[in-house]
Length: 138
Image (cartoon, rainbow, N blue to C red; front, side, top):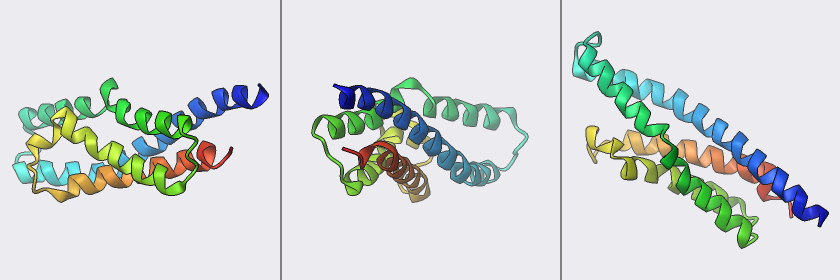
């Protein structure tokens, strides 16, 4: 009984910390990418460009983007998967699916692999942090 209560506390707290790490990695790596996109459009002080980028940012922080990562955690907890590979790869796949589901990638084009690399790297980092905090403990 005590182990189950412990998991009920550890899992949400670990997920929250992993989500914060993921957002930090996504922000720091994505900041460089946003700068390149703004300069590609030319006029960086144009309000249309800035509002377009803000709209894309709002899509990224929407509540629906947490569902793929939450699915990885729930499946891992129910199946009692403790493999680092599962959480790292699952985190990467969960984050790469976000641009696909939110329509964020449509503005960048499918050939722009840098977008996918930023999301995958952030997902890998988040999956690893979750595994460190909650995944490796039985």
